[in-house]
Length: 563
Image (cartoon, rainbow, N blue to C red; front, side, top):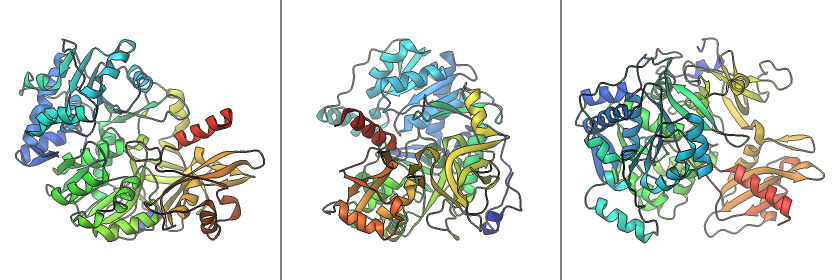
């Protein structure tokens, strides 16, 4: 528990308490309560179709009943491989109602990644999109999968979009795959129709029973399943709701463009929306123009996102044509938020955009800047209620001094149980309830925290420690730079040197000398990039995080092949 002596608590506004009690109940209970209190309120909006809380609850109950009829027992794993969609929300809560553990699976996974996750989790059923079914079918024999439930985007589209969708896909040269339905391969809508509305959800122990295996990592070894309980996810959702203390129960509209298979989108969009009986405005993928249109038409009040999303929006040539004034609150996560982007987005919308921090192992949020009170640009803000944080000194192994860079450690009700079937790895990152995050940072005199970079991303050039985030911030300050990423590349003399990947704003031209002059005014000489590469775009995850490992892999290939 956070204690009153922690220096950051003095900055908490009166509306936020240092500690809260968290209800010991299943995560799915919030959907049941929403249905009972506001059955006819809009729960989901998806490409023109709306569903009420009653409708979402009924479909979830019917699906849960059928999952049990298919042989699911309490504690079994059910994989969900869907984009943001009503089916994704329904499947998530249905799996929990059946007493199962959800395994969120990225629809973009290649077969190798999919096979590892399904085999490692031991999932018995997967609920997937028809477009990815061929991948599932090819790996099924190497896993424990017994049943596959297949759905398509048209299943929850309004008329006539549901009829036109296959034609649009064919035009895009992405025709719908032909699927032979059997006892082991079922259609989602057929399963829903045969479900029993009188089904009673399985009782779970919120503190002990797992709700989610969230796979993470994979850059330094096989992806690991983060074990999160119902209590972990409820605690983090409640912590987030108290942080956004001006949100109104039953009155908000939340833009759901962050992928729900990512723990950030799952908690801050899906779970928070259901808990607060909000309207969830769902987009299956992020497209800047479609997002601008949706904001103007559907008028979301909350827009959790990632820096690359905000960057794409503010640089869209038509942004001035859209009314974005409904947006009141945005919390940015998954990657550092450049100060320039924060300030410009706030000017364009009139809303508040603040940076938060988290990781899958903490459900995910542990820190955030205050939304309506004092915030410090460039900081990740203050620890959440009931959350302790400290910096571990690399030199002494003890708690670091103020402003000393070290590894961030956190402790709180949102911290994971451990890694699925990996006790040795768990013991390396969990110490007496404290989670070693792997992120390097520091705390200032007032208790605000800062991340300087991932421990593994730190560049050591000629003996100097260089943190990519600092260099990226400087590049973002240049008015012609839209995106930037910094990595370390091998150097015979320095050991490593700094390489910058830069995406320019449309119609702008720069060369290496321009950027070097810009950096030289703002950085010590050893931090200035020695190599620049200009690109049309950077590789990213679906949540918008730049895939530095892909850039590093490219550099390794170049070094080994000379090309």
